[in-house]
Image 1 (tube, rainbow, N blue to C red):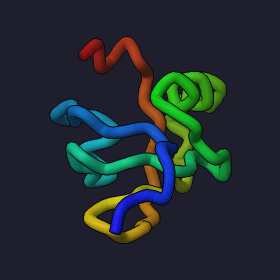
Image 2 (cartoon, one colour):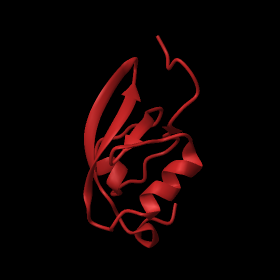
Image 3 (tube, rainbow, N blue to C red):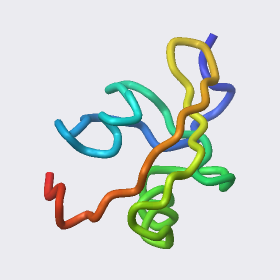
Length: 83
């Protein structure tokens, strides 16, 4: 069973040593909520993350392999992870 409609931001890569790897996000995950905000698409996620203080730990809701899961992500500084 997949998502009912196109929503969220799709994880296409995880930078080694980055916040996503630390939170154990995986390629293929779909980020549905970031810090309580429903994520519409990849661009929306980038915008919402940009409004979040660096080093703040936030709850993230993801969809993986047919299940909704919850993880915490510590926001990093974009310049530390240029990829």
